[in-house]
Amino acid sequence: MEKKTIITAAATLVVGLVIGYFVFGGTSTPSEEEHVHTKTTDAQGEEIWTCSMHPQIRQPEPGDCPICGMTLIPADGNANSDPMVFEMTEDAIKIANIQTTKIGGASSSSIDMEAGLKLSGKIQANETTSASIVSHIPGRIEKLFVSFTGEKVSKGKKIATIYSANLITAQKELIEAHKVKEVNPKLFEATKNKLKYWKITDTQIDNILSEGKVMETFNIYADYSGVVQELKVSVGDHLMEGGVLFKVQNLNKLWVLFDVYEDQLPLVKIGDVISFTTPSVANKVFDAKVSFIDPVINPTTRTAAVRLQINNNKQLLKPEMFVKGVLQTASSSNQTNTQAVVVPKTAILWTGERSVVYIKLPNTTVPSFEFREVQLGSAIGGSYIVLDGLASGDEVVTNGAFVIDASAQLNNQTSMMNRNLLGAVADETTEEEIPNYTAEASGQFRTQLEAVTNQYLKVKDAFVATDATIAIADAKSLQQQLSKVDMKLVKGDGHMYWMKQMKIIKEKAQEIIDTEDVEKQRKAFDLLSMAIINSNKAFGVSTQTYYVQYCPMAIDDDGSFWLSADEKVKNPYFGDQMLGCGEVKETLSK
Image (tube, rainbow, N blue to C red; front, side, top):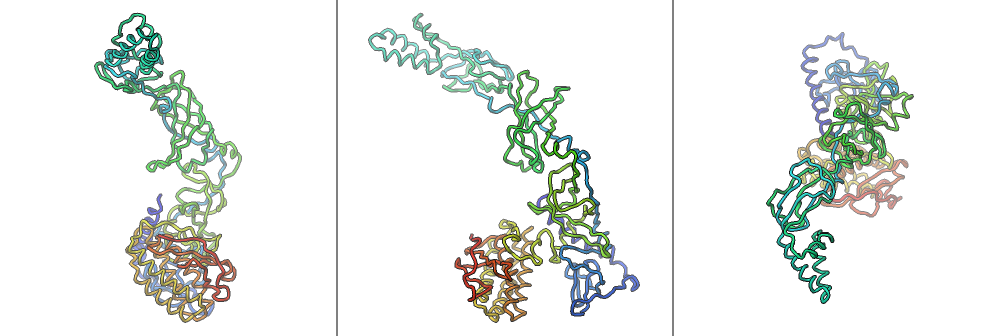
């Protein structure tokens, strides 16, 4: 499933979840006995308020849920604060139809690895053994000795007779030149070579000279052997020199083409042996080696063609025959005695190179689901082999994972789009993988984003000068510029991505405004910078050129990035103390 479809489905399910609550869960008013809560307080002793449908919401005062708009209630004393764990009530789980499955180890034989990779395909003609039989003589076809498609032609076989006025003239010139051969031998050789150029043999030339008369027609002989695929001429047709009479295909060597899905391609290598059968040749198994793997994936079928070459001297196989094959892969022979952890395909959320599942945690008062990245191996039927990230006995969400992930994203918890958002410092090892949404953003949006970026640069300059007061003023201007951005100018998945980045920019700018401690401001500036950088990378730069710069000593030696319009480094985290500390990591331009 494409990424755009995933986000659309997730958004639909989240909306359905909210609507479902009001339809099914909000028709009656629960009694006070049904909603007895143990009040929770934070470190300062203040009461915590949450949402009955979204327990991950935790606020220090009553109000409305930012996700569904419901009135907040006092939180139970058992809420989980782990950003990797998302909590849901039993009612929400029922409405969203969340389903889980315990996974376990499966022997290789039980997942049909020993049988190898099953493939389907068909026989095709070998493109390297096709040829066109042409006339080397310009003239009119008098007779054809090959008259229908599918007829076999052998090399050297007489295939046509042609009348050529040009050839008659050339023969007359040869006879006359032969008479003066002793006087002008070069003229004789020239006229003789002219006939040879038209593929007239020495024997035919000798016959013309010995008889001293012109031959009115000449025979054309096949240069190749094969089956006639296409008949290009009829009796009476006039051909130019090099005109095609027939197209022939040699069927002694054929290609066998199998369709291999992209997730199965790692199992196939050049030189692997595939055994195959065809219904047209009963009780016969053919073997051939993989000689070519198509470098391009078919965008419609999501498959690549894997080609074998096979000898067909007995003519048992014919082009367009359907075949079924089995590939004995190295992995199938080496894993017959191993235990493989497998997970249903419905549990997987795709995020490029990495994949995500949600694990239901055992022994929790509130149903809790943990975000987990996994490394997948080959696809086996309706499951994937798990190379890393899951263990036998884990209970994975197999239906409704999109709902959980979308809700976690809206709550700014770890999700497919929010891997590095919570507490992750943007260093060289944890830098977020930025999607490309340039096609989903208009030029007007990029112009507005550039205005936001330029205001951000003023905030950066304030920290270069270590001036907390100016930083506060510029952060307020940044929020004002941010409010002018029309989010409707970004469509599809890019809209969701901008919503996340916009939220970070707004929140971190506010943190800068709320304190006069420049070091606290700089910590907020760290994540603010990443949101600005991510936005410019994802949506593209309008007109200016920016430089992504990095200092490994910033933020207590954890390192941090920032954006600059000047290639020369001016460190916003240390100011005059270490103004030149850092380096340019990347250049962003139109």
